[in-house]
Structure formats: C-alpha cells, structure tokens
Image (cartoon, rainbow, N blue to C red):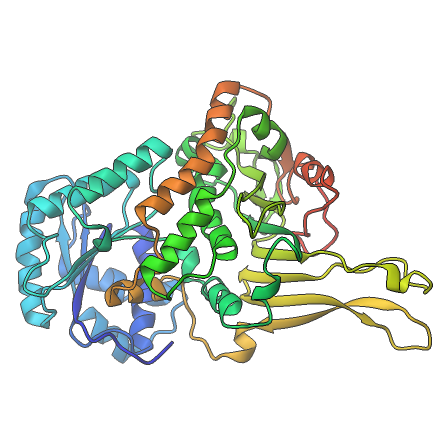
Length: 506
C-alpha cells in the first residue's frame, strides 16, 4: 500500500456494525489500512446495530476477533484501533437511535479530534438504505458545514429492478448530494481491476489494438463453487442475473469497454463508464431467447463439498424458476466495439472459483504458412485474472525448436505476488481509503446504476412474461449448462475452461 496517509481526520460509522460483513471484511480492511499506514492518527470507528452490546463488548468481539478472519495481528496496531472503537445500539428506522448516535459522535469527535468528518457505511440489508439516510438527514448528520464532510457508502444490491433503483436514487438524493454518495462494488477494489485503466491508457502498446479491428470477442467469467447454502429465501428472490450482472459483471465490462477519459478524475472516469453501459443494445423478447441462457444447478460436488440441488435448498420453492447461472451475449453500439460480442457468464456451484476477463484477438492471415506443416494458428489472447489469483496472461504463437516450421502456443504471465510485496487485502481497503480521500472514481454514479439496470430489465421482463418454464440444469461442480456452450458454438466460438481443463458442459 502507498505510504500516504490521508490528511483529513474522520470517524467511520458502520451501520450493521455487529453483522457478518463487518466482522469478515470491513474490520480486517480497516486493520490492514492501519498496518499499511493509511489511517489518520485522528480516527474513530463507531458500530451501530440492533444487537444489545456495550462498547467494551464491541471492542472484544470485533477488535479481539480479527485473527479469526485470517488477519496476521500485530498487538500494537490492534490496540490502537480498539481504543478508538465505540458502539451504539438501536433500530435503523428509530429517530431515537440517531439522536443517541449524534450525542455519541459529538463525544467521539471531541475525544479523537476527527474534525466533524463522518463516513457512514451502510453494511445492512438493502431495505434499510433509504430509512437510514432519511434519519441521518433528520438528525442533521448529513449536513456538511464549517469545512467538514459527510459521506455515505451504500452496499449492493442497489435496487431489484430498474424502477426500484431509480426510486432508491431519488430517496438518497433527496437528502444527500451525488458527491456524498459512494455506491460500492468490492470487485473494483481488486488490484487487477484497478490496473485495467493503467494497463490500457498508460501503455502505448495495447490501446491501439483495443478495438473492433483487432479484437474478435471478449469473455467475462465470474464463477463460484459455493451453492446457495442457507440463503435460499434471499437468493430465490434475487437470482444470478440481479445479483451479479448490473453491478459486478457490468463494472468489469465498463473497464474494458470505456473510452479514455479526458482526465483521471472521478467525474471523467464515471462519465465514460456510463457511456459504455448506455451503448449496450437492449433486447426484445426474441433477442433474449437467442442471446441469454439461464439455468439451475442439480446435486453434485463443488468446492470440496456435496451440494444438494437448488430446488431442494431450504426456503426455496420446489417449482422455482430462479436462475443460479446466467450466460449472455451483449453488443455495444459504438465505433470502437461494433461487431465485437461480449460474452458474460456467472453462476453458483461451478467447477472452480474463478473470475477473469479474456480478450481474444482476431486471427492473423494464414497465407504465409500455407506451404508449411503448420495446419492452424493459435489464437492470441490476453487474460486478466481477478480472483483468486490476481495477474495477467498474454498468449501468442512461437516456433518450436527444430529444423522444420512447427508452432506452439506460449504464455507470458504476470502475477502480482511475484512482482510486488503486497499486503494481504480484502478488496475493501482501497475503496474505504478512497472514500476517506473523497475520490469517487471507483464508485458508481446514479446514471451508471440506472444504465446497468436498463440492460437487465428487458431480460427480467421477458422471463416474467414466460412464467413457469422448465429451466436448463447443470450438475454442481460442472462448467455450466450445455445450452450456454451451444450459444457460443452458434457463433463459431467456445467458452474458456473454468476448471483448467477442456471446457465441458454436463
């Protein structure tokens, strides 16, 4: 991490401070920022939740429990952080909670000299986002005055369809300015994702070929080995499309497809991302049938454990048509990408936990090798590995040693851990740090959120109109349904392997 601590002191207030997200990811991220020298000395952390708990109990539970979540704890840094932690119990829709919170923040602000700068993190269920922000406004906690700032981080899901996303934007913007809202997507905290813009725009080698003249297609894969588990009720109401495409997958697509921003500031970057989403073709019902595949997993073995079929998961109806896998072909109507398909897929209970972006370049002309033993040319590709291992692989052809002309594919690999001594990270460190600095480059603006839902909404409408239909299935632990492979084969292409072997669909 860069050793440049922010100059501005602040208090981080986490709504849902006793919850799983806070324990597993946010607290380790805050601790890693401290270890990296990126927390200001004038800092405090306040947890707010319904759970009955004292400040001392909160300090023991979260500060003392850091090592349970894979954190290599240094006692001095942990004690520094624990001494700055406080807790407020209360309901998120109760004005009394916010009155008491204001009193507590006045106290912690004075004790830790945080300058009246408050960063509110909404680590809560989505239905609490609007009520919390409204109560912050009524309590005067959203008002910026005397040079202080107030910012709000909103977790996903940001809406469940286009209308609810627009309604939530209106609700938040009735209290906050757009510059106070940070709609977070933790995928954008990954080093490889952040490196895409540097890779594209700081290297004269790649940007000249980043277009329809040289790129055949793009594949984006977000695969998980875990099943739905105990989240049956939530997942049945959400599904893979809503859960992943308008946010995670859509943001990965924009980093690849966006035009160079005029400046590397938040508004310029986010404007180009929004334009990329707005350029995606919207499907009619016939297009959905041709270009979108949804499926559910059946029983199998994935991620080292046996998984029951989705329809047998507790709190999931046996006749549900909610998808646990979705694959689709998208097209972007602009000069750079006309005719270049973007294939995206995401799903649960797949062969391997794996997120990558693969750019496949067009074939070189074969005529030069027609009178040689070479029977085909290997495609050139650039693969951006996002998780679990972060790095890049460039694949191209080379001559095999020997007196005859024989070719073979070779790979140049770059792994972050080989080149940089990066500290362990959750992906949230960069995003929290950017919020403290006031840099919104990696966060979604209202127009980008709505543009993402505008891509997804016609698909949701077509599925709703279709009603109860028989969905394709795939065995847990496989690479997905055969229908997804068939969609690619119609275009003369095939998916890259998820499991590291030949791509198979069962």
